Amino acid sequence: EGAQLSKEVLTVSLINQTLHLSVLFAKKSIGMLGMAKNRDALISETRNDAISFYEDYIHLKSLVNSIETHPVNLRHASVILRRLLIENLLQKISSPRLGRVALHTIDNNPIYIEARRDTLISFVSGGASIHGIYIAAGMVNKGPAPLTIKDYHPEKFILLNLESFKKQRVIFTSEEWITREQIIKFVANVDHGVHAGKIREKWEERLSRFRHELSVNLETSTEGVPLTALSWKFGEAAENISFERYDPARINGVLIEILATIHFFISSPDILRLIEMIEKEVRD
Image 1 (cartoon, rainbow, N blue to C red):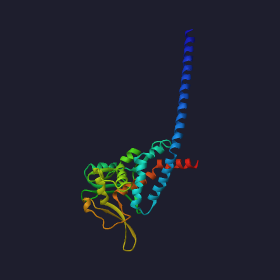
Image 2: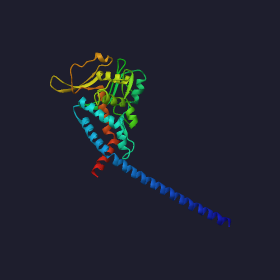
Image 3: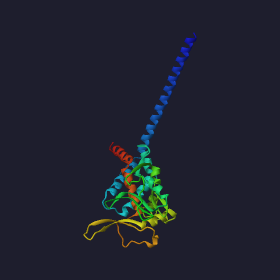
Image 4: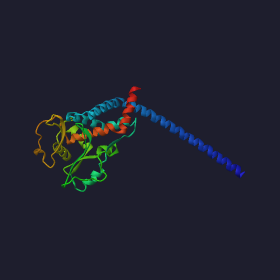
């Protein structure tokens, strides 16, 4: 009888466990169904934002692919970057479609290590073509010879989540680092992207000086051939630096990073996948 009782108890235990698991699976199925409905609702709610993002992507891509680059286009593009990255519209669009996004960028970690050795005077991360010439890793260092930085290559890329991409340090000037987020805010809010605002922060003052220190512009040789020229007037006070003439094609050091941000943004694998999803969504 004891053995029979044990068998019955065991059988009942298994039956109860099966029932319990069935309830769990049922609850899980209902939860997944609810999540799917919520995801569909969010996709529907963000449809107009997604279409706007798609159009912004096409516009930004055209800027990167253009042979001639003009500062007015980059200032206007800073507004798009502010909306998508700083105001987090990109994450709002991506969440129900792709989830969290990662963006690729140059690996500047070896540069940060070098900067702690007090060898750098000025640095711009770069990573984009300006007037047909790819510019990356512009650097001025102390001492008579160029630095050789271990494990650094301007075409060695890493993936960063959205917040880390915004916080990446990309300009070194006046012994301080400037982040990508600060650059976007500066161009959009101070440097005539959206507003011609007043400089209020120390980092804004540093970026304002950096605009006048570094520039890339188009010049013409004596044979009439267009040439890309780099000018880097470091170590001088901003009020002592003046350009000889107005040049609508001159790209200053801050705008170099706006263009580089656009380049990394539009070529990141997650952004390409998101664009494919939106294209399919619009077709369907």
